[in-house]
Amino acid sequence: MTRLKQDDIYQISKSLEQLDMELMAKTGLTLRGIACAASGVDEGQTSGSIAGITAAVVPVTAGLGIISGFSDTVSAILKHIGFSSFTTDSTDAGGVSEAFLRRADLLLMADDHCFTALNLGNLKVVDNAEATARGFVAGLERMSGGFDRKTVLVLGCGPVGSAAAIALIQRGARVALFDLVRERAEALATELPTGIATVVKTDLDTALMKYNHLIDATPSGAFIKARHISVKTIAAGPGVPVGLDSDALSTMNDRFLHDPLETGVATMAVLAAFGGISCSGNAHRERT
Ligand code: 2YC
Image (cartoon, rainbow, N blue to C red):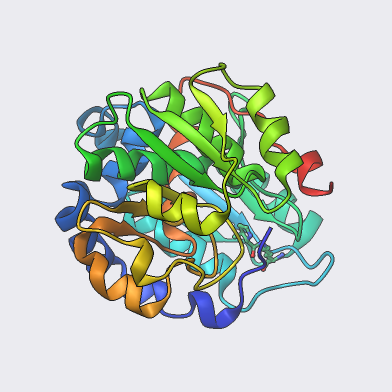
């Protein structure tokens, strides 16, 4: 899991309106719309009740500690899509206690291994990796005009890439799995329907030239070059840093989705509050 830095997130809170405009141009949806589409809930039916739901964001000092601005940024994203939200005054256990005492409906907190959203009413658990994957897959589907059995190249078979492969298949796509560690791609393929999920046998360069639909779920930066991009390329990049280099980015225009935190946070909260399917965290997998 890539640990965000203050530099990655310090501009998010004041750029959320801009993000909505970019998402509208690319997908026809705002951030809330993406989160609802990813969660399988109707935006019109939830937008009224979102305002009545309060989320507490608890800063966690464990491990490498607090990321300056992280909790307030998470809270700002949640407010932007309509939740009531606050960062607790206390950190860690004191913050959890405060969330309960202030009757929060949702509790979000992150250490170095797990970023989770808890529904304190029905005990649903939503993991950021799964929510991030579902949010970007929903956006990619909108940009692609539906998958309709198209093959999407999934780069990186870790927690986000694995959840993305599952979400893609659920939405009618085929997936080609690539990981620098071939065994990780093969292990994921064994968990997916044969014929729908295949492991890329070629090298990365060849794969990037071959597929027009990409999900970059790797922690690698700037490895996707302009030569890998065609006018038909449509991509989503939950991975941090961005996998496309500046030349590749400049040719993508409105066909590439990326943000370091917003899509995952918005989808986590909507899934935790409204998502019919209970998501199990995959924190244990983070440690392997
Ligand atoms: O400020 C705090 O409460 C810190 N404990 C937050 C640590 C977040 C570590 N995780 C990350 O930076 C990202 C997540 C946002 C998703 C994956 N990695």
